Every structure is written in structure tokens, then in C-alpha cells.
Amino acid sequence: MSFALLPSIFLQVCMPLVVVVGVGFFMDRRFKLSLESLVKLNLYVMVPAFIFARLLDTPMAGHEAGRVMATAFATLMLCGVVSFCVGRVLHLNGAAQKAHSLASMLGNCGNFGLPLVTLAFGKEAAAVQVYVLVTMNVSTFTVGLFLANADAFGGWRSHVKALSATLRQPAIYAVTAALICKNFDIPVQSVTFLWEPIKMLADALIGFALVTLGVQLSQTKPAPLRAPLISALAIRLLIGPVIAYGLTELMHFPKAVAAVIILTAGSPTAVNSALLAHEFGGDRSFATASVYYSTLLSMLTVTLNLAVLRWWMG
Image 1: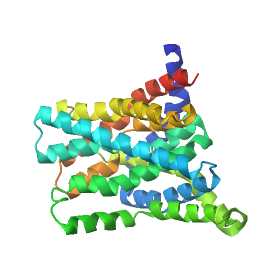
Image 2 (image 1 turned 180 degrees about the horizontal axis):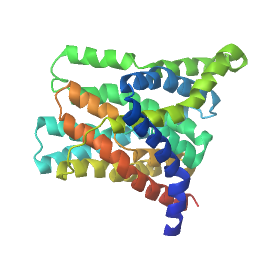
Image 3 (image 1 turned 90 degrees about the horizontal axis):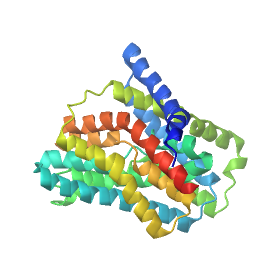
Image 4 (image 1 turned 180 degrees about the vertical axis):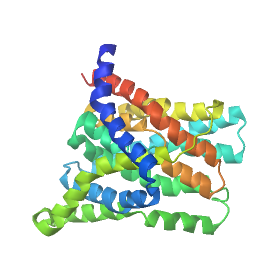
């Protein structure tokens, strides 16, 4: 691998992300944008449209899609196991351990991962990333919610609440609708007044999601970098891709598919981890700091990760 390629990779893949995130950051500093409104537009409009459109466009078979989702979920869970072990070594208390695990497990596969994969490997690779995104969304509001709730395994109300939160995620219905259309050969693409608006919204996601991420960073007040936070960042940005590499080798994925899974396994901490920590008594300062610092540091780690992947792919 030639380290001379690192500046080129940073400028071609990461720098465009930095520029658009910077637009969101400075727009919020100037106009005080509503983060809640931006997140809702992402969650309820842009992401479902993107998922629906890309699933219809992708030729990936159901069996292969299932293997991608299983690998993404296994990566998430193994990061959680590593986080638990580190937490025991560092003697983290309940709230700190919850925040540490959430920060280590939940990656930003949406408004960071999708643009990253698209820039790095093209629109075809984004179809693979859609399945990783769906896995992360469902895991966040099932495994993540159970983990964040101290009484998640103590009563049926917690399980009902988790299920309710999961069923409110539009991404699930976008996946369901796309699979129905594909399996029953429903010609949605030929219905212009439906398909064209969906395509426009799907195409708008990447830029809009990055602007939203910039606003999130602008409104975050990070805590100081300390040992527990550094360990969570290391798991999220460095250990995650290593785990994903091992799993993709075990599953015998084609390198083009494996590269997407490995690259997105090193995405920064998802903002949902901070929301869950806040809602269920976790360490909110720790959670928001992990989002902030992991996003900034990911510019370096993603550049190195992508350089290694391109060398590995030949």
C-alpha cells in the first residue's frame, strides 16, 4: 500500500463530506437552524425515499441481502461485547457503561455512511449500504433501546415501548414496500408522477444529510477527551472495521461487497446513541462527545481505512 495515496483519497472522498458538513455547521452558527426539523425531514422523508428507490434499483438477491444484514448485525453486537469488556476493566458505572456501549455499537450509517460509500465506491455500492442502514436503524430501536433502558429486561412495558419505537421507523415500511414491489413485479418506475418525486427525494438525501450532520455538530458541546471516551472512539473507528473484515472473510463475500461493510463499520457514532442515553438516564455528556469527536476523527480513520481497502481490492 502506498501512503502517497492518502492525500488523494482524503481530497476525493473525505474533503467533499467536510465541505458540505461545514456548510451546515456555519449555516447553523449564522441562522440557528432547527435541528429537530432537519432530523425529521431526514428520518421521515429523505431516508425512506432513498431506501425504497435503491432497493428497487439494486439487483442484489434476497439471500445476499440477508447475509449483508446478518454481518452488519454481528459486527454491531461484537463491538458491544468489546465495549462491555473494556467497561469492566475501566470500572464504569451503569450510566457510563450504557453510554460507552451505545457509542461503540451504533454507527452513523445514514447521513455519514451513505455519502461516504457513494463517493468511495459509487451508486452501485450504495445499494449494499442500504441494507446496512436498515440493520442499524432496526438495531438502534431494539437492541439499542433495550441496552439504554436500565429496566429493559425487567418488565413487559419496556419491550412494548421498544417495539413501538421500532414500528414507528419509516425505513422499515420503505423496505417492506420495496420488497413487495420487487416480488410482485409492481411497475412503480413506470408511474411517473410517483417514481420521479421519489427519485428526486432520494437523490437529495446525501447533501441534505451532510448539512444536517453539520448542524448537529454545531449544536454539540463536547466533554473533554478522557480514557473511557477514547476507548469508545477506538472501538467505533478502529476495532469495528477489523471485526467486520473478519466476518466478511468468514462469510466469503465478494471483495466489492465486503469493502462496503468494512468501510461503514468504521463510521462515527450515531447521534441516536446520544438521544437514547439522554432518554434513559445514560451519560448524556459522554454520548454527545462521542458523536462530536468520532465524526471529526473519522476524517483521518476513514481515509486510512479506505486506502487499505483499495490496496486490498487491488
